[in-house]
Image 1 (cartoon, rainbow, N blue to C red):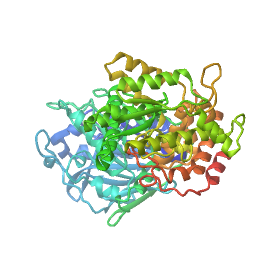
Image 2 (image 1 turned 135 degrees about the vertical axis):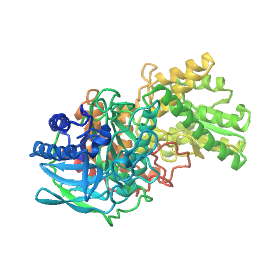
Image 3 (image 1 turned 30 degrees about the horizontal axis):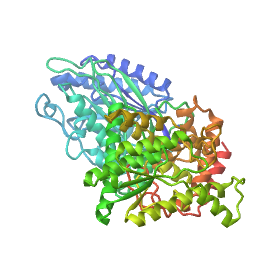
Image 4 (image 1 turned 180 degrees about the vertical axis):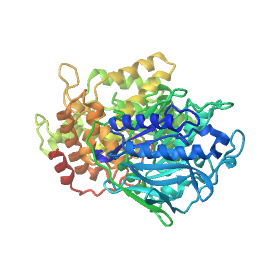
Length: 636
């Protein structure tokens, strides 16, 4: 698919034990269904052509011959399809029987991957029937051709270079050193597993965590197809728990105890980007591997993958609360270390009644409590000027008092007016100088008060503002420690909400909720009829869009047209394509042009996988050119 996606499937067919014809018919039905769903890789369970639970019937030549006859019928059914299919079956070679995953496509048998690790404990007796598979591929006769048989086979797509598939079988994934490790190190981006794992209490939880963990550790896609109803016989019950995972993320899971086919759209480009980014992920070493090439047509189809519009914010309430508590702790612990290291017993911050300064104050209070420093040694300074509204002023004052910090009011109107006269700037000219003069005056006051009391200025600006350069250089851009510097605006809101929901004091909760309801604004222009006149999101765009752009650009290196496509999937009903494109162009322009502000930003704690610190995550040149990215958007 376009932009590196590929649709994959894990299918559990209805089977009858020792009835290859019935099983083949069901498998063919699912292959046809998979093709109708535009699936490009489809994985079936272990030994599904005969059924896994045949027991000593695996010693019957009639069963083995019938399995190969039905394999020919399945190959006929795949003729004309470019879907890569893996299915489990018994395979005889040189007097030994092997439990294998057969790889087929477009009427061809591409390879045979035998199971290496045969369980012979508890309810499993596979060594009674099968021999452990060979690692190094050997050529085996099939019809008028020879095909490779061995665990070390890579199936490489000529048309999609990032699609390299390898296989393992059931128990192979459960051992300390699974074959998939070698496959991934040899360059496999997708691992398939034909499995027959029976159900016992709690096993599904372990199985899920195991497969998710494999995909994370190996930075790969993992398709796990498990045996289901129909296999259950004598003492065993099979639940058909199919799993599709990608680099630690669960893309799809079937319901147990009901045979299902699940689909997922894997992002191969994301996997390759992650491997490229991780310097500890070794370059591919294919020594000893047999590479089998196949062709696959690209299709431009609708993406059926959940695109999270709020990638920084968990949707599950319990997980969101846990994340908020963790982030507040990281922020506070970072500040605690800086205060403790410098011997500083006083903190100074500007309090505006807005979201960012509110969060900074809450974090500072937590750090002071950890150090057992009295909260009244936190100096919250409110500095009203031309754009300050009564609502934000009252919220700033009430919040400070309720948290037990020391409140100081310094009206900066006179100082700013004097500054206008000094530089010959008209008060009626409400340009960027008019706005930035106020921001720099506030920062000067904070720095000088910090000098007076031997304190530390705590920065309030968040990561979204830094990404857009929405900060006054050497104004609110500067501090001695920026506690919010890697917290995006969408997450700032949830952190304040979490604090409000968990605090016990009613008045404090009420003021926090009102801060949350207040439009985001720098309040640098005079209010209109007492209301905020300057709304940030009207000027630079919705922060939920910019945070989405920021996440996909920095975390996964997505190209502009892919970011646009993902944003349309996530926000299309809310904003529409034209609006999204408009703000995406704004993001790229500002992100490139404002790097000089990030290049000299103060220290601050990293809280997530995306950050813009020049000392950590983002080593970006201040004079980089955005033309390449903007031209791609213009050509959409």
